[in-house]
Image (cartoon, rainbow, N blue to C red; front, side, top):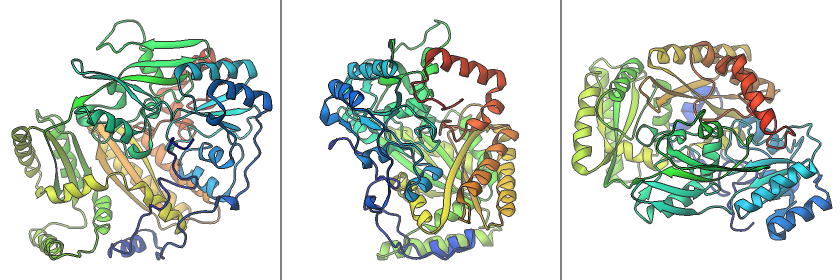
Length: 557
């Protein structure tokens, strides 16, 4: 499908786009200190697809003929590269398997339906012919929610909704848009922006992920403080099932039994295929500004973020990096090339020196970013209020320069993971949410667990974190960890990632705030929602899909 965009088969994002460190003089020394490796220049720009061996398709001619009859021959493919693109998401485990050509089981055929009716026909065919259907959006999942079971013997259909990519209607009075599920984030925003509106939902995967994927995995965008998580944004749904289509109208609130809307959000394709969504949209703000602040310590920064969350000031997002993540961020600064930038860099060095003279430990300082939107008068007033709050915790206001740079680079970080893999280093993320009263405990517990895991593997590892996505009762903690790959990458990763996940639930957090469950996080489901909760979810999936045709094995097996 020429007009359906896909990421490169072997990694994140677009071919030809890479993380570069040659223009970041502090980065290589930082990596050496953090994980003990000496960086080398990138040695390859791509991976030749012809170097890997792909399992043959299991799809019979009768199945292919039936699918062709539904969506047309140009929208049904058994092409090896397309099947590999659709076989998994972008978790570390999946990237390692993909790069080594270790495909236990991949989809047999990729289908691009062009309408809800075609989706319905495919699902009915799945029941009739005993097929497995795995819905596919952008392929950005890092919880292994797309990967087929390695022992699945039935024909597997990857149902790519990329042709269903339009904003169908806009109710400007109610602030509601009706949007097809397969639309990529940038394409949806372009359509909404043209009429002066925005969804306001910007996850890190925004460039390559879809609205339907966000709903199916219970996503959260970096601007959720203002616009809400996807569960708040989605007001209505159309979900195709083998026996019919569930239609949930975009009502502001209802008292009609258990929430079917909530049931489908986060269901990862196990209850049906989301084809259309009614979502809250907002007028594009007149003015937007991101201001950076520097705090003397993590605890002072957390206190300030909590104070902002419970104040009357309305921020679009409020995010703070701990000391480790702050040092990482500073290491990615580019070498100044103009007189203006050289003066700014000198000014930063002088500022750090002044801070040290005032008693700051510059190895403990934490950078924060707060985004303000509204009229110029509103943002000015909100900035003044936040400045008063953060100064009570000893923070310095750094201004809009660092904030603007953060805003420009917010979707580039995933490319760093591919770069590190080529350096024989794993860099990955894991996130949780916890009440305000437990954030410090969770943060420390995760650091301790990661360091114990690194030591058990004999590794010089690194971990860092930031707090984001504030709520009345708590917030999200997002961790990044890295270490050099040893002799058994999969066992090492399972042990280290598992230690972090276990620390989440042991310390009072959730197993995932916005990455979903898939199979990566399912081992902790009983601890998170209780054994009886898992039995209830399993019963729901079994009753809704007795033949296990819809993305089986995800969330709970």
